[in-house]
Image 1: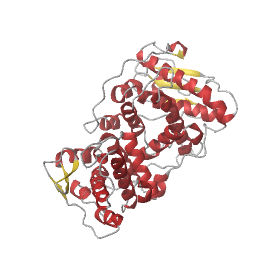
Image 2: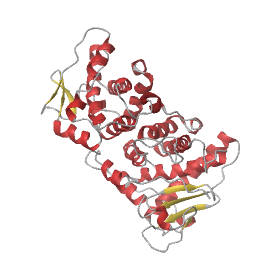
Image 3: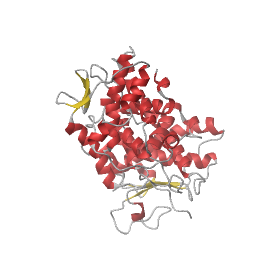
Image 4: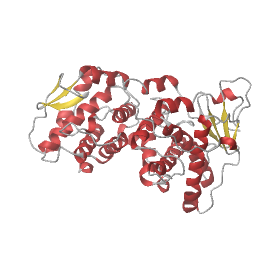
Length: 417
């Protein structure tokens, strides 16, 4: 029997991502109707397993409709069933693919050997729910069900030749299902854009450590990889999930990461003025960058300059990494370049274009690494400063900011029109 392919929960990283840099949690929505978890082996019937049962019931309803259209045969529920484990209790019955209940601690997985899904209801799902909401639980469990989709479609999930592509496909399938909950088409679940933004942090928590071998048998991908795959399914549907690209590897050349540069070096990152000067197509002096108390955000356009609050931007730099500061500074230079080109600088289109051009700059940044891309993605999720227009208004969700950034990163400035 092959060992399960778990999503490894790193509690220290969870605490970091959920720390002071995270956006405030939106008000909790009215509770959705929940499904009785009586079909789950080992359930305690409590609220966590009720949520898990609701996610899996809605997801299976989704696949019962989508799977035949994609693969020409009916959907079949997992033969081995679903297993909930209390990993804090000694002597509990182990789920499939585990020697003991404690082997599942902090994890959820699809066990291909018996076609079953298992999760830790004491140290995984409650923690995700507390920090990132119900949608984060839905992301994790629908990812595992995505492996069952792959198994039924003919993908070898026990010993895949390309583990990263297999995991990205499951992320993509999760995104396609979450779209139904976002659009109000799921039987029970309803998720707002703000809830989905919070849920994307689950993919950051479960990313591979920076520098991990992407060809390893248990590779899941970087934050950029995972969110790219999820958004592909969310935007384009399950038919797009057979081949999920990994553009970050091509752009960074597979470089892992460098040491974190000090804040001042991050603010004055090499190449930003030159890139946006070239973008305008004529001689132009980009606005100066300086610390100032007039910044209502970590960075802002103020008095003909790009200004930043050393404390607020410093917090993001320290908690996420140096590329977080560089990304926000570049976004304000991008907005100034839009004005120099006589393109709109107010409204949602301006915020999207500025974020897109930030991605285009990032692709040209010297020494760009996979860690840098992860830092850029994270700051775009937790701060809307990158998409603020000339009036200081932002109309984009975190997911929309990441998508716009990726468009520029992969398509260059011409894709930002």
